[in-house]
Image (cartoon, rainbow, N blue to C red):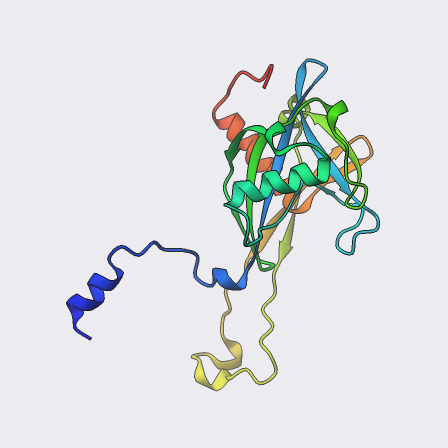
Length: 213
């Protein structure tokens, strides 16, 4: 192959995340709802019958399917299914930064506005309950932060003889911040807390008028 042929073939290539095809991809919605004349963030408690993470606090969302038009469509579709509303009821959406999880997932979060709480009819197969937290409360709350450290454990037949340093190789390990938000009897942590903190930090960095949505 000639060099000019190689460059011509790839000059318009759009890059992606290396290895993305091996990751599970999800989209979620951080829902805003007006309640008592102020903005609240709506959270779900996962059904106690769910196989994964029963009883944990989360945002609505789910796996991106082949028939979904894009990541936003997934977030809207899943939210409408879980909260029993029409897709057209979800408005004023915008994206947050996506997350590349160390646990083999890519998560695409969005923010969107929901109708009044009395119009919601949660799917009890997936949602144990819903609750809301005032946005002002969360903006003034200082979450507790703890570190999770990842440990490198090569498999038994790893070829240490092929790398400089052998079994004494200085692996570059990393840590991940875990945040905890407490509200009444609810605990918000994990990816939900990371997405929440990202959203709150965006607001704090670009203050806006938050009286209505």
